[in-house]
Length: 545
Image (cartoon, rainbow, N blue to C red; front, side, top):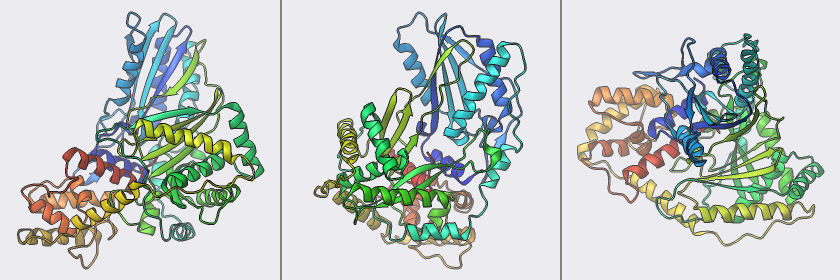
């Protein structure tokens, strides 16, 4: 397994989260050969190891297993007699339905029949084995295979010279010292976690707010970028940094961005997870004009992508402070450039749309898609930081910023007073630190000694103190499996990964395990603990997009 796969798998052990599903809704208008489509999907599954992969756990070992080829199941559901909204309802159900990671399969498909010549193909694949580059390969090869099967031929798909597990193993090679040194220097004296100025009601669900840029504004953004030797990605990222500056009062922000790790030629036609999150730091302290921000973002992007290493290695090298927030970034930006027209399936016209699963991956993500119908900005947000009204204000503010900042002499907006969430974040950090540092009760001292003994063995360190943090000592997700297994064996009790993340010091974990009830803290609601633990794990370990 790659570092990115490991991080994602561990996050899913805390909360099976549909945010890691990659669902597509493919509208098919025209005569369709369902048998040829089923065969073509089977051809792709047989061609790509990743689509036959699963992730079983045996004791303290986690493996990626690729099953042998077999028949692919394409379910066909007739919705002709049902109301128009039935297709949307079914698509959303399929998008959120859990996967069996240990047994697989991690791809499912269902064909919805709406009329004799109108269908929708719902495809859902797990992010563990799929990324944005995989989607381009998948749909192009699906068109090739369908054309062949409809003509009663065997498809001639590009052969994969290297097996998928071998491509994944190559991602575990230790990065160069030069690249690691770049990130140590770049992320020295990291700014504190972002606190977005929102106060949503408890139980607010995650959401998506979409805005579309006018053609004139999209053109102005591109012209502004070219004027400063910046791509659209750089220009819109810079505007996003200014948006965060305006709404948080921070002039130093770190924004995560996915980078495709397909530098090896063998990955050109491969399906799998070949993406890495990079922490791009944008400093605006001495940047009175937007042109200055653009220059800084351009350097950050070129240098960051030029020194690309797995984000897990960046975390180990920089040893950022760990709390309930991600140690590197809480906001994410990505841009999908315009693609060629979607491939057709025979005489069918196709339209491909992604389905929102109802779960956001980060506190705030701005995803920009350049489509044939214009530029679309998707704001994905967690319900713990924003509500629909707040997301609407933030999205509208971004569009207004873009319009203002395309002026070549644009000056950055003045900063508002710090939001109340800054104080809230400080208080939350203080509360977490106090809870972690509480003294060990007498009844927990024996447990503390056994826990420290396991940590010394697994982490290969000579001394472990009561207030030492598992992650600060070099612990990571794979070592957690060993700790979990050894503690269960020697203490005779189950220790969940959520327990280890919620109580990362010897003292805290011993106190928790010795207590007959969870510690009385304001944030000790079980559901909230699971949600917060999942967020810490998926982001602290550098969860991919």
